[in-house]
Length: 279
Image (cartoon, rainbow, N blue to C red; front, side):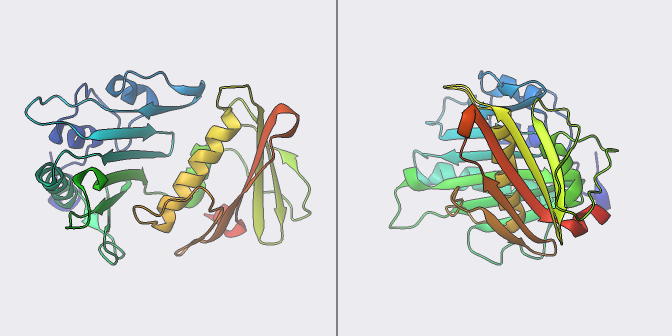
């Protein structure tokens, strides 16, 4: 099958099969759902339905080589596959050629692709794919080599915010600029409010936390952080959870305010430009 401009159809599932991941079944395009990806890891979904993600290692089919270590995260708005702990450089080189070749065959490089070492970005067919990597060199052990593939929807920023916070596509988000908080309905099991102050729209979301469990508010904060990091084009090795502010090319400034989890509730805020509401 052919996609845009005669290119083959991009499929994350096909990419997984190409690198010999076991248990790949039918997946939605362009991003799989957490439920669809759950068979890949054998791990239970994190969160409280429908606010869930899949997080765990993939299995490889081949017994011809020592498989590398994998970590797969599938959320409502992004997918990230990290491949590390390679047994040797040849395994890294072969897998990198498969991944990069498949992305080049099915998608189109963006203007910022290749501008920095260890970073490529492709787009097309409703998806943006980031490929981060560390090349083999004489100073690195093969166990320190990395291939990181991340997917997010190629859509206006507000549409992704709706996915991250469980907002219906037709839900009205037009807070007056008085700074007051107003409740917003969400499909996720959390309390969501919205306000506007000058040129910034703020979403505050909270949920109870329990010992040893991840609250829905914390999941949403993780998703927002990862999505903003991907939008900013952070290269491999520089993802830092301490970061809470991003200047996004062509989109403006966005930030996250993390709460102190007082009174056994996790409370966080996502701040976005008010101009996103006009898209």
